Image (tube, rainbow, N blue to C red):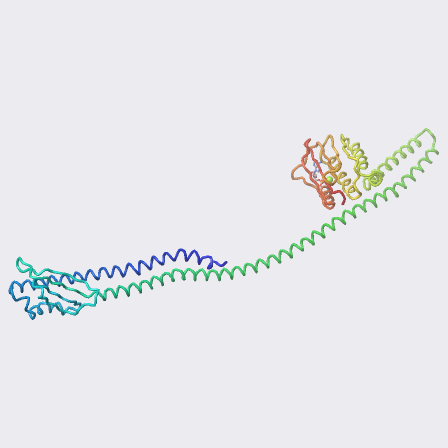
Length: 414
Ligand SMILES: Nc1ncnc2c1ncn2[C@@H]1O[C@H](COP(=O)(O)OP(=O)(O)OP(=O)(O)O)[C@@H](O)[C@H]1O
Ligand SMILES: [Mg+2]
């Protein structure tokens, strides 16, 4: 709805009484006042003339007490100065003799004003003078005033309504123009936002695909290195051990040569153990062969033994599918490595089980906790990336014993 249309109703409601009032003031009060003052003035004029004529007639009556009422010529000369006035009505002179009446001037056409004066001759009343003056033209003017003032009132009302309406209509037209421009700008902006959003989504998809590929490539690489370590280096070390065993049989049971061979055998065994350790860390065969809980247990126990920390395990027997199992195992590895590297903890808890239609793993230590401002490396970033890739999430928060609690949740299957 335009402002002009909205304004029309209230404006009419407010302006109409105002216009009626203005019309009344101008159209009724002005003519009424004019008529009242004009009639009063004319009546005063009639009174004045009546008094003048009465006093002149009184003088005549005193001069000629018996005949004055019959002397029309004389009476006419008394009246003449008055009848020569531009506004003249009618004079009537009544004498005590009822049939003796002197009249002069035209007969009025109604709407006259009149005034009386007594003709006092000595101590007796010799007669009465009545002056009637025309008032019709005053009433005509008043009527004309009434009509024209009424029209002026109407025009005023129309003006009071039309002027603001015209201004509002102009405003409406301007508003419509501005609104159209705004809508155009908005449409343009929305189109740009849509294009940007589509571009961003595309980038996001690309990034997430890249992340997934990175994780896959990392896993492949680890598997390859693990295989190489196990197959090549492991085989070579096994060959070396066989030769050393053969050599051991050839050297005398006592003596420095035998001790050197035994030391070499010990060193080779340690190297074999290290290679196995490395290979298992890179691609834990327990995960494929035994499933997640067993692989977690094996890794955590080995890790706790080498780190010298107290370990508490709470692992449910549930077996997640390969996808989530792999992610959870890698995150547990990173969490435990972080505890050993940063936490200065005495003990660590590892909990795993089903939760909220998915899998939950918690690694919590009793160490010194996170140091603000030392957010550091890529381990946790990668772990979070893995969790989110799998449709889950990873939280790192203060633990109950003051250390760090790392919690990861993954959906049922990836
Ligand atoms: N259990 C923990 N206790 C105390 N601080 C920790 C713990 N785990 C992580 N942090 C802190 O969080 C930082 C980030 O850890 P993150 O694993 O991302 O990096 P990093 O271990 O320093 O390096 P990277 O894992 O890349 O080799 C660490 O540098 C360390 O300051
Ligand atoms: Mg780390």
